[in-house]
Length: 341
Image (cartoon, rainbow, N blue to C red; front, side, top):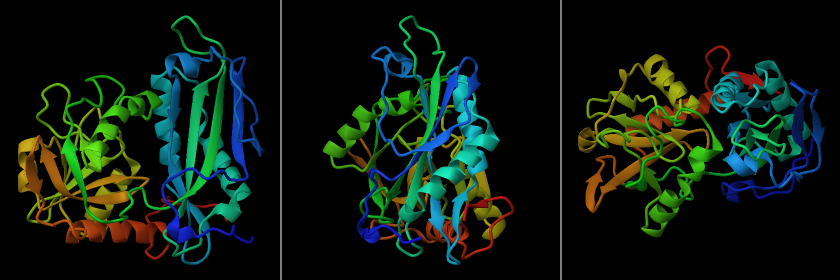
C-alpha cells in the first residue's frame, strides 16, 4: 500500500487524524462485536460518567515497520493485561484480551498507509481507551461504556530525541499510597498537568516524583519509569506499589540481564542515592529511553557523569538493543513481536 505523503522525519509527538479507528459499545452487561469507523468524533450526553467522575482508563503502544518490511506491535498482550487491571480498579467492564489484540490488528491494518516506513524514526502510536458514556449524577460506576482505539503517526516524545534532558524534583505528589498510581487512569495524568506545565515554565523537561509517604524515595515521572546505572554498570529500577508497571521498563530489565549480561536490581531507590549513579533515564512506550543529564532539587544540581551531550554507554546499549528487537534487527524473545502484516 502506498504511504501517506508525510515528512516522517519531522514529525513530533502530536495527534494527526488518521483514516480509521475502532469502537465497541458496552450495554446491558455485554460488549458488542465492535467495528472500524471513519468518524473521529464522539457524541456524549452532558452527564456522561467520564465527564462527571473521570471514569476512564487507557493504554499506549506502537506499530513499527521492521527491517524486513513487516508491520508489527511490541508485546500487545501486556497492554491488554494492564488495561484489564486498570479497568477493574475503576469498576469498568474488562475488554477481553483476545478481542483487544484483534482490535489492534484491525485498526492498524485499516491505517496501514499511516504506518511510517522503516528507518524514518517515526512510528504509529496506538491509543486504546475505555470510558463511561451514559449519564451518571450520583457517585457510582457508569452502566454503559465505549472501548476505542485511535492511531496517530508520531516522532520523538522529547524534541531533542535521545539527547539528555533536565528534570526537577517536584513539590507535588503523583499518587497517594494505596491509591491509583499503579494503573493507567486518566485521572492520574490530569493531576500531573499543573506540575508539568510549571516545570516547563521553569525550563525543565520533566518532573521527578518522590514517594508520597516519606518523600525520600524515587518513584517516577508524570509518564515514565526511572532507570539508573551505577558506576559499576549495575542497572537499578525503582520498586513501588504506586508506580505504573511499565512494559518498556520490564522489557529493558530482561534485555539488561539476558542480552547484555548486566546485573539488575529492582528495589526501593532513595533520593540520596541519585547523586552516586553514573547514568539515568526515563523509560516508556513513547520515548523508549530518554537519558537524564541533570536533576535539580530546589536549586541544587545533580549532574550525571554521562553528561548533557549524549546517552551514557549502558543506557545507549539498552536503547539500541531494545529498539533493535522492536525493528527486527535483533532476534526477539518468543512472544515479544506480534506481526500484523
